[in-house]
Image 1 (tube, rainbow, N blue to C red):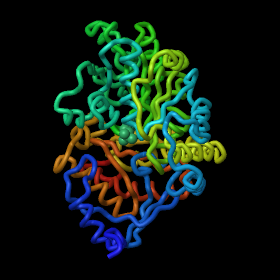
Image 2: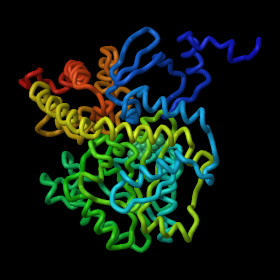
Image 3: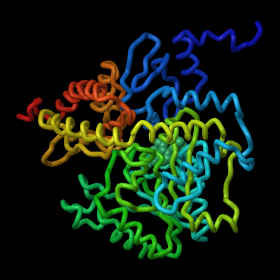
Image 4: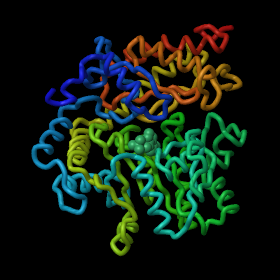
Length: 460
Ligand SMILES: Cc1ncc(COP(=O)(O)O)c(C=O)c1O
C-alpha cells in the first residue's frame, strides 16, 4: 500500500457517512449523525451522491453570497496558489494590500484599516480585546438575541442559549434588550414609544446602573441574523451610536452575517448611515471558499495603533489564498451589480411572502432587508403566540424540524431558529430559482398551518 489515504474509498457515500459518524466531530451537535453526502455544487444549487438536487436557500451558513463555485473566485484562488500560497503576516503581499485597499473603499465613513482573520469569531475576539485596551475599561454590553462566535469572549457576549456552554461567561458582560418591533419586551405596541426600540434611552438606563466609565464597548449585529433576522427600527442605531459617543464607549458592529451585500448594501449599517468604531466581517467577503474574516477600525483607532501594538495576531492573518478569494469576490460583486440584484430579489421575495401570508395563517410576520429575510410563525396571529417556544429543541421544535425535512426532501435547503424560518439564498440567485424555492416553501408552510387549527385560507 503506497499511502493509507489512497486506500480510502472516499467515493463511497456509506464509507463517508461511517467516517463522519465515527471520526469527525460536527459543530454544535450530538455526534454520530450520518448526513447526506454532497457530491458537488454550482450557483444556487448543490447535489448529493444519489443525484438529488437542492436549492440552497441558506447559502450554507449564510456565507455563499455569490453561490457555489463562482468561476472568478475559484480562478483567483488557483492563480494565487500558483504564485504564492503562504507568506507571514508581517511581509508585504500584493494581494493582501489589494484586499486592505478594497476594504478601505467599501467600509463606511472613516473606517480605514483592517486586520484579516480566519473567520468571524476571531474578528470579534480581537475587536473586544482592542476595545478594552483602547478604553482601559473592562465591560462589554451585548444583546440577548445575538450570536458573535464560539471562542471564549465571543461566546460570552453571544446572547443565544449557546452562551450557557461557556459555563460562566467572561467577567464584564452586560446584557441589553433587543429592539424587536414584533415582540417588544416592554409590552409597547408602537416602537416609537418603546425605550428599547429607540435604543438610547434603554442603553442610558443600563449605563446608569453599570457606570459608563467601566464600559469599553457595545457590540451588536445591526440586523440580527442567526437569532431570527430582526431589523431594528429606523433611528435605533443612530441613537445607540450617539449614546456611545456621549460616554466614550466604542461601538462594534458585527457584520459577519449582515455584511458584504447580504442586506443589499455593502454593510447593514449603511442603510442608516451609522459608522461604528470597529466593524467585523467574514462569511460573504469571499463566499466562504477559504476561511477569512475582517476586523476594521476607524481612523482614530488606526492612528492609536501606530503608537500601541495590536493586541492580537494569527499565523494565518492575511492568508494569501483567502485574500485572493476576497479580492475576487468583492470585484465580482462590483462588476456584476450584485448589491442591486440582491435588493431587487429581496423585494420580490418579501412581496411573494406577504402574498403567501394571505393563504397561510401561521405567518405572523415577514421581515428582512435585501436577501436577509425571515418569516416568523405563530399559532395565532391575533395573540402572536409563537409556533414553538423560544430556542425549542427536540419534540418541542417538531413542526419546525418537520418543515425543514419536508423542504429538503422536496429539494429546498432551509434553516430556522425558534419560530423563525430564515431565507437567505445567494445574492445572485436567478428570479426563476427564487420562485422555485418559494413554491416549495408555500407547500412546506402547510405543516405550520396545521398548528394554528385553521385551514389554508385562514378560516376556522
Ligand atoms: C453575526 C455573527 N458573528 C460572528 C459569527 C462567527 O463567525 P465564525 O463562525 O466564522 O467564527 C457568526 C457566525 O455565524 C455570526 O453570524
